[in-house]
Length: 321
Image (cartoon, rainbow, N blue to C red; front, side, top):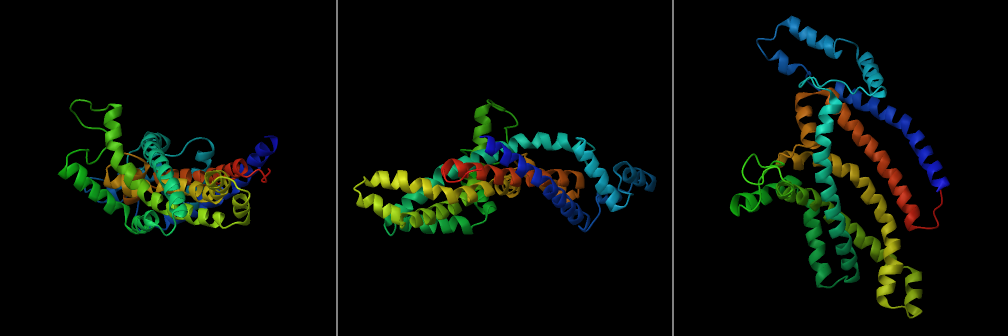
């Protein structure tokens, strides 16, 4: 435990200069985007040049780019994430309102993908060449190939428009019995969580299948069978644990991708999370909001890698920190 804590502290210390470099790159890329954050004000005929200049001064947009970055960095270190150019609200407050809906969506999708993909991949490997494997394999390729927005539109067409079983969009109903309840939230959560999980179900199933097949071909599996161990013990005790170790990397690294990949799904289903906030902020070039969201994703990547290393040690006793 002591070694693990020391290792975690070392990794977090190493992450600080990495986050600094990432912030510089992101800030430079955002500044290089075509257009201007004040376009919405410049297109307003009632906005006077004096008012535009006052807005620039209030947000520091009249300063050189490196001064703007240093002001932003100083604010981040002191807990001030800046002010949204469009809503004139604190960035941390705007993002804070969207974190919970996104966590609800991504956590549900993550668990759904993991619970379905792992058994499918293992079963497909055990039944290699049989009917189950022959059906699962093309379905996974189909899931990987098709865009998520298409899945979303098809589900909306079937369950919302045709069958009227589920609401088409939003997080809660606007009115009527049960609006705003937990059941109402769950009904709105079903379709976007399925759409977001589908691609990961397909890719994780393929990866689990290939890992499990590789493990089943190892010498120690043949030795276990030669010793007369039951097939169930060989498959689910000796093989499964070792097949899970490479899966940890893929699954953990997909967590931030899942978190940021909710942009399309949240937009299709009008889910009020960070994905839709990122899309709106990108179209309006709200740099403070974009910087906040992208830095949250960068921190998620680092934490996911650290968590993957910790899970490695739990699955493989040979790994010591």
